[in-house]
Image 1: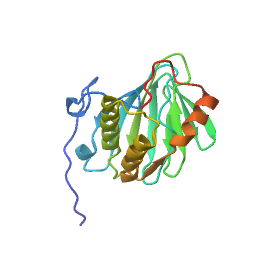
Image 2: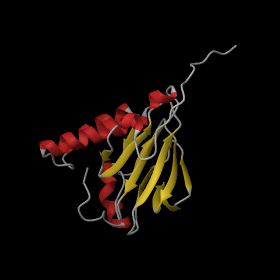
Image 3: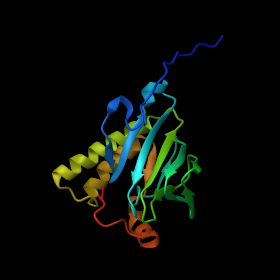
Image 4: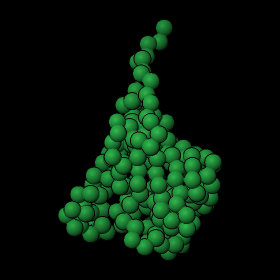
Length: 187
């Protein structure tokens, strides 16, 4: 007989985050952690993200130990998967398997909202919490987000979560797919 940890049901009310935590600023995106890793016995976490019109997501990146499932609930999200762009409209789903270079952005003049789900033993929602805290610290320090020392701090965090972020690809990505909307946060 296999034994397993008995989990408790979890309910997160509409328009709230897990444990009523505040919404995070992750690279200028509003991100709410809806389901925390520890709430599911280390099996799953989920976040809800809001992209303003013409807002970029993260630089292109690759997860080595994490799959992602996106469910767009409002607007349209452009997803770069390798060298192909897919537009995911409200009601659509997108699966990004580990090992795929990807990113996403809102290429329209209307807001976009999506839920990202991480069916993994990796606590990726916590990575986003740490990334938001790092961005806040860098802003408070007045750090240049593109300085080598700043990128090194981002990369140290990325390494702990077994993924690579290709910061150096962001200028070419912006040139090809369009700049973020004016006033969007740079980190």
